[in-house]
Length: 68
Image (cartoon, rainbow, N blue to C red; front, side):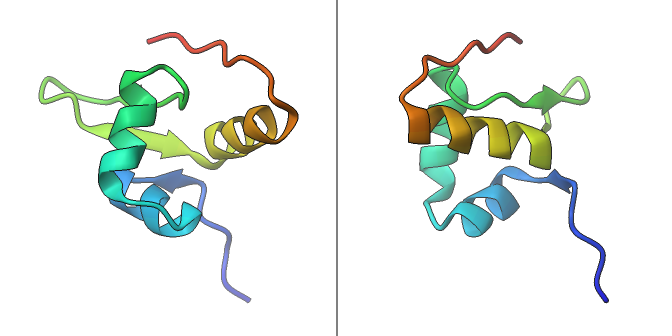
């Protein structure tokens, strides 16, 4: 049995959600999708919890509460 992925790159998150890489970046820039910036280059990582929170907020129409 394969372990479930818990940390995604932006491209992996896009593939997981079935959207474009640019849409993931837009959601991050619009503070709709939370992420971690992990180094001086601002490399982005997104946890599975952040993805599920994003999906739950969009399904219920809740406003996101994102912080950087």
